[in-house]
Image (tube, rainbow, N blue to C red; front, side, top):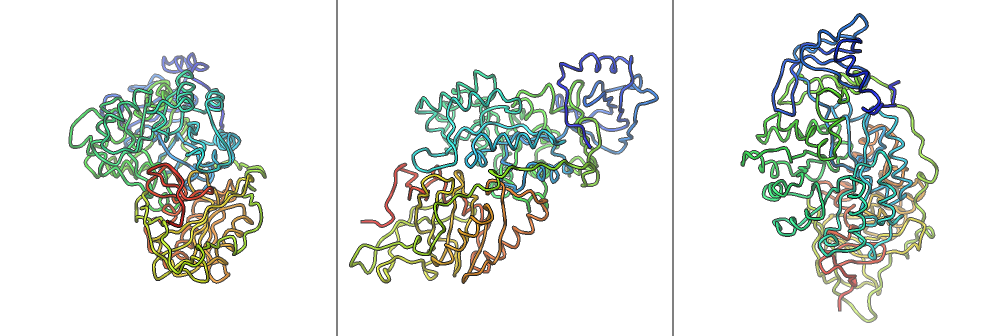
Length: 597
C-alpha cells in the first residue's frame, strides 16, 4: 500500500542535496523523456532523478544512478507535472473523496483544492474534518479551502451549521486548509459587512489566499473593489472580457469546464485572442458529475478543451500546474518538474490530445493505461454523517396542500420558471384555477408543486411554491442535494407521490428519487450527508442513468435536470427561489408571498 506520510521539504533538504550531488544514489531515474518546463514554456530532453517522494535533480543525472536505482525508460513520452484542480466541489461528483481519487488519478489529476461547502452546510466543521481525514490517506493530494458562506443567505434559510470569523480563524490553523472558500457574499464585501470582512481578515492574517465568486458580468468597477479586499482568484466568469479583466486586476482567472457550467470556449479567448501573459489563468472543473468523469474525463478533458479552442498545449498545462500552485502558494512543493518538488509526473503519449499513459505520484507509478495500480484504504464515515436527514415528522399528502383564498375560482401566483442549461430562474406571475379551494399542479400548464423542508433537526419548517418548465406529466422527484443548505427538496404533480418521495429519502439517509403512482421508479442513495456515496463512481453513474430515465418517463426533457432542480433552493441566484422559510425574491432580497394580491 502507498505510504501516505509525506515529509515536508524542511526535513529532507540534506538528503535531496546529497542525492543531487551524487554522494548517495537516487531511488529512481526517469530517462529519455521530453520534459515540459512550466517555468519557461520549453520542452527539454532532460532526465529526472528522484529521492524518496521528491525530485532531487534534472537534466544530466547520470551521476545520481547507483546499483539500487530504478531506471524508467520514458522514450516516446512527454513528461509534465501532475494536474492540480484549483476549484471543485468533490460532493458534486456524488462520491466520497476516496472514490473520486480512484476515478481521477488515472486521468492525471494528482492534487485538488476542494471547497467542501456542501458538506459544511450539512455537518459543519465535523463534515469538513471528515473529508480532510479521508484525504490524508490517499495518493491524491487533498487540500481544501474553508467554506466562507455557511449558510449562503443568512436569514433566508436554515442550514446544518453557521460559520463566522471565529470559525474561519480556527480552521486556518489546520494544515490542509489552504485558504478561504469562494466568497459568494460579494455584496457583503463591497458593503463593508463586519462579519464578511472578519472572515477576510482571519484569512489574510493567516497568510492564506481568499478565493472569490464575483458573478456580475461586465462590472469592472465592482470587480476592482472586490480585488481590493485581497481576493486572489475567481471562477465566476462566463465572458472573455471578465476573464481578461480579472487577470488585469491581478486576480487568478479560473476558467471552468464541468458537467453543467462550460465556460472555457468563451473565457479562454482572453488568452488566445489577446496574446497576453497567461500566468494568471487557471483551468478548473468546479462541479463534475460521475458520468462526466467516465465519459469525458476530468482535468485532462478541461486541458484538451482549452487546446481545442486554440490555446497552446504548454500554456494549457501551465494553467493546471504551476499557475494553480502559485495561486495557492504551494509552488515550492507542487506544480513543476523541478528539484525539491514532489515527484508527481504524468507520462503523456500525445501532448495536444493530453493522452495520459502513466501517472507517478510521490515517485511511484500508481496508474497505467487508465487503471489504478494501488489499493486505496477504506474509510468509514461515522453514523452521524450517515444519518443526517432529520424530519420533524413523516411527510403526509396534506403537508403539500396549498389553500386558495376563500371564494376564489382563479388566483395569480408567483412561479419559478426554470431556464434550460442556466442557473437562472424567472419570477413569473401565473394565473391558475382553484379546485375545491386548493391550488394544484397542472401538467397542461407545465406547473409543478415544489417544497423545501428543513432536514437538519431544527424547526422542521417548510416552504411551498410552484415551478414551471420541468415538463412533468405525473409523479414526483426529491433530492437532498439542494444548494447550498441541502434541505429536502421535492418537486411533484400530486401530494401523495411528493410525500412518498420525501419519506423514501429520509429512510435511506438522503440522495435522489423518482416516484409515480405510489411506486419508486429509481433511487440514488447518497448516505454520506445526503450528498455522497462510498460506492465506485461507475456504480453511482449507473444509478444516475436510471434516475435520468425515470425523469424522462415522468416527462422531463431538460439538459442537466438534476443540477437545475438542485438550484431551486439557492437564494443567492436571480430571480425567485424557494427555501424552507418560503419564497425569496432574490433581486430585491426579500420574502415574497406565493399568492399575489
